[in-house]
Image (cartoon, rainbow, N blue to C red; front, side, top):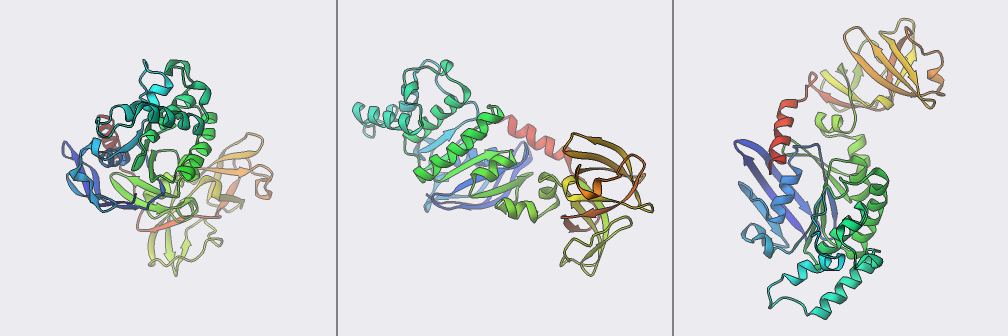
Length: 366
C-alpha cells in the first residue's frame, strides 16, 4: 500500500504542530519518522491512523482518500510503546482480538481465527506463550504479542509508535533485528516513530528527520550523517560544536582553524557557521594556537578534552593512542583541524528551545 501525504497541517490551540508535510511512502517500504519530542512525528502517525484529523492537506493510500474514512475502516495495525494489551486476556485472545470484533459479515470463523493465531505465535517465536497472560510476560514478549495482534488483521499499513521505548537497551537491539526480519517476510508498508537515531538507521529503508512540525531531511544514514540539510539536522546528528567562520572561494577560514581537510563548498563568500561533531575534530599542538586545553581526562580509550579560546569552550574526543594526542595536557595551546564538518551560510543560528519545548508539551497532551 503506497501512502501519499500532501501539504498537511495541524494546529493545537494556536500552535502549529505540522507545517506543510509532504511525504510519499512506497508499497512495502519501512520508513522511520525520527526527531526529538515535539517534532510532530506522533501527530502525523495518529492522522494516518485516523486518531487525529489535520487542519488541511491530503492523505491518500493506494489512491483512496483516507481522510474520508473512519479509523475502523482503514484497517490499520497500530503498535504502541506501552503494548496496550488486555490484561484479562491470554496471549492467544489478545492476538485474536482484532478478528473477533469485526462485523459479523466480515468476521472469520472460529477455526480460521484459531489457525491464524497459531500461525502468528509460531511466526513471532512465542508458540510456548499462548496460554499466558500479559502480567506473566517480559517486556520484549509483550511487544511481540502487541505486534502479533496488529498483524492478525492483515493490516493495509503497519504503524509503530516508539515500539521499543519501554525496553532496556539489550532487548531493544534484539527486537530491532527481529522486527526487520518480520517486515521483510510480511512485505507490509510500515511507518514507525522513534527519537533513537541508531534504531531508525538500523531498521528503516528511509529515515524522515522531523523538527518543529517540518520535514528537515529524508535519506539513509550516510546521507544524513555526512550531508545534513540544515543546522537543525546537523545539531540533531551530534554536531554540537559550532564555530563562526568566513567562506572564501568555498574554503572555511578562521583564526586557530586548519580547514585543509574539508572540501570546497559551493557557497557564497561571507560569514558562515561550521558544525562539527566532537569526534571529528583533531586538536594539533601549536604554541601559537588560539585554543588552549582547559581540561583533560581519559577513559582508557578516549581522551576527552575541553578547549577554550576565552570566549567559547568546546568538547573534543580523541583516541588516546592517536599521534595527535601525545603531549596534550592542561595548558597546552592547539590549532583545530576538522576532519569532517557541515557548513551553512550566515551567522550562527541559535536553537529555539522555548518553541521546541512548547511543541513537546502539545504532543504529550494528546
